[in-house]
Image (cartoon, rainbow, N blue to C red; front, side, top):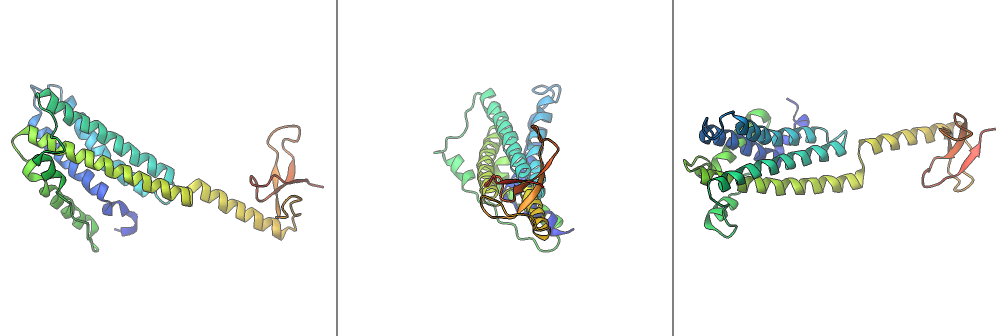
Length: 246
């Protein structure tokens, strides 16, 4: 396995999303049955929403170098599906005439104060990351494995909301990087423009009458000159200088 292709293994959001996924599978297996979920629809919806989070985080991170727009979009999809899952746990509590733990309660504080460890993989990333995920899940087992579904649902609601906030910060960082570096499309455009500008220099292209920069050949796409070539400033759209090709 080439480590560079699996950067998401180090993401705290991906690790926590897997914890929520595993815990949701366990919750649904233990507390949903033929009486309260006769068709198995709620089981499917909750486990698929939980699965969507780590899957979209992984896919988004894998597109980091080719499309930052796609990376942000998939990260946001992960956040949205977690909101859906959090609402399912809220509904479970309300259906049982219970309310979520208050943020000022001792129960909430106990779960909120649990801080997962940072990953520290060496060369066997798949093996070591799996151990790490299970170890992080075990930190919350006193609540997740409780026979009391209300306690387990409250814990998972806290974890879902924590992860939603983490993903919000991750999207902000991705957006900041995009603003500074642009995306894949912008990089391709810049590379193509640089190549065309260099070709124009080698072909003794005229200088722009407005700014003096080398010009490149373009083709008019509309109007009476549609289909005809003309000289355009290489700094377009910052500069609109043009010349006719004689």
